[in-house]
Amino acid sequence: MEKKLSNRQFRSDLLELFIVLGFIFMIITIYVPKAIWEEETLVEEKSRFNMQNIFDVESFYNTLTDSFNVNGAWAINLVNAVRDSVMADSTYLGERVLSVNGMDVAVDIPKGFDVDFDTTFGFPKVRRDTIVDTTYTIAMFLEDLGRNDTIFIQHKKLAEFQANPNFVSLIATESKERSELTNYYDSYQPDESMLVCPLTNEPYKITIADDKTSARVASPITNLYKERRYLIFSFNAHNHGYINDGISSWD
Image 1 (spheres, rainbow, N blue to C red):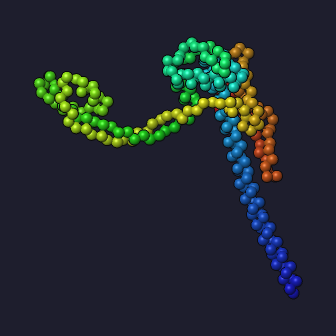
Image 2 (cartoon, rainbow, N blue to C red; image 1 turned 90 degrees about the vertical axis):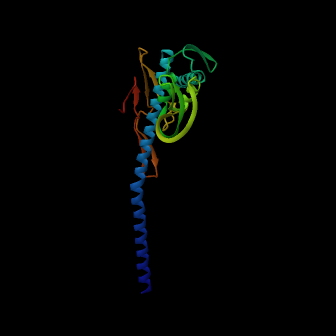
Image 3 (cartoon, rainbow, N blue to C red; image 1 turned 135 degrees about the vertical axis):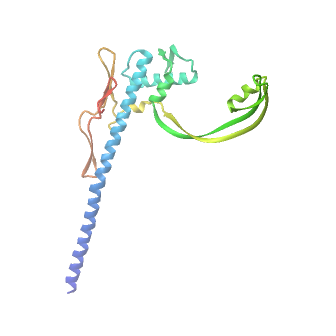
């Protein structure tokens, strides 16, 4: 009798174990593939972000030198060097000879290059600023009226009115706070890490059209890329596309 009870308890415990393992396996089959799909999407977005940056660098390089360059690292260094020079001296425009890594390069820097750079290599953001508006009440002698009169002016105008011979006195000051939304770009500089695919660590393929008028940036992935995950799952990635003469394959 005790042996039968022992066998029954063993089967019951074994059944509970299978139920728990089955439940765990069901959770894994639901959430692990989802996590892998999200990773695949993130890598694809990162790869396409890199390709867009490389093409933008080539576009700026073409603006500066009237040519493209399959050496992405050199193009990045030149474009960044020009941006740094314009930041240091806003009048650093037009035809210049710039020294980059010990080499002299002739460039033609257009007006507004710094603004184009910051908006291209930057993330648009919005912030809320608190602004203090100060209003002054002053007394001025008005010749047309032949008497003093009060005028309300902004803070930035005070010095101008005080320099006026008809200025009489400062009567009162009032400050008010207001909230204002400001659009801005969180800028960054492209770097050489963007030249390689985040998945394969192979360089993107930069080619120039036969007529030298356009450039193409393409993913190094040519066949299906697979990585085994958790024995029974796999990470899969197809070609992440290309950008040819400003037109991306994923649009």
